[in-house]
Amino acid sequence: MTSISGRVAVVTGGASGIGRGIAEQLIAEGAEVVIADVQQDALDATAAEIGAVGIRVDVTDPASVEALAAAVLERFGRVDIVVNNAGVGPLARVAELSLSDWKWLVDVNLWGVIHGVTTFLPLLQANEEGGHIVNTGSMASFAPMAGGGAYSVTKFGVRALTESLALELEEDGSKVHVTLLAPGTVRTNIKNSLRNRPEGLAGALADVDISEGVAAGLRWIDPIEAGAIVTRAIRNDDLYALTHPDWWNIVEERHQAIEDAFVKYPVDGASA
Image 1 (cartoon, helix red, strand yellow):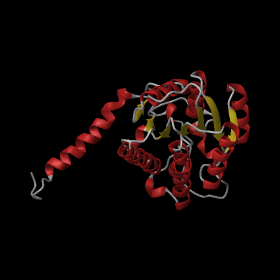
Image 2 (cartoon, helix red, strand yellow):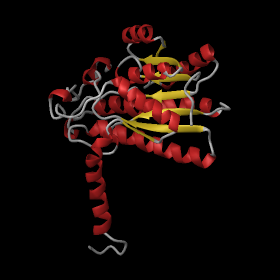
Image 3 (spheres, one colour):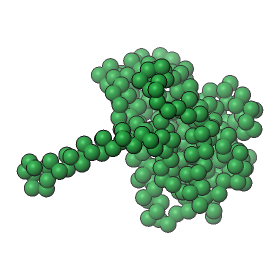
Image 4 (cartoon, helix red, strand yellow):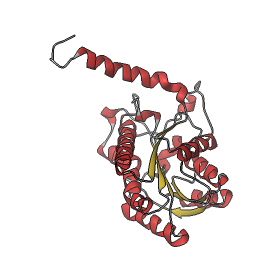
C-alpha cells in the first residue's frame, strides 16, 4: 500500500474540477499538496480556499513542467505522489478537425501526461519509500465516442502509457506504482475548455455541455467523490480507478466486438 498522510503530492489541473477534488481529498488524508494549473486567477483562488500551494504550469511545455518539479523540490525536498490530471474536452467530428485542433488537444491531454511522467518518474524512483503516479484518462480510454475522436485518441494514449508503465515498474520490482483514473460524468467545467486555448488557432473544436444533452440522464458525481476514488486507488496501488463501474456495459460491447473479430478470423485465415 502507498501511504498518503505526510506525503507531498502534485496535482496538475488542480485549480478546478476533478483536479481540485483530488487535491482536497489528498489534503483531507494528510498530504501536503501542490496544485498546478495554467489559469493563474483560478489557481490562486483555489490554493487559498483549500490550503494548497499553487504553482502555475503549462503542461504542454516540458520546461514548465520541469520548473514545477524544481519548485516542489525546493520547497518540500521531495515528491511522493504525482497526479497528471490537466486536460481539455472540446468535441468535433474527425472530418472537421484541423491540424491545429489535433495539435492542441494532443499537446494538452497526451503530451501533458508524457511530460509529467518523464519529469517526475525519476524523482519518485529516487524515493526510498517509493511513490505513486495517477494519470487521468477517461471512460473514452476504453470506448471511443462519435464526435470525440481526437479526445478519445488522447485518452487511449494515456491508457496505453499507464498500462505499459505499470508492466515495466512491476518487472523492475519498483516501489513506484501507477493508476489510470477513468472518470465518467463528473460535475466539472470541462464544458469551458476552450477558455485556455491559445489565440489564433483555427479549427472546429467546440465546447459542449453534455449534461444538457445525451448524458443528462446519467449518474453524475461531484469532484470530491472522484477524489476519494483516486486516494483509495493510491492506497491500494490499484491500476484502475473507475468513477462509474456501472458503465461496464459500454466497455463490454466494445470488447465483445473485438472478441467476435478474433473468432471470425482464426489463425488459418479462413472465415469461421
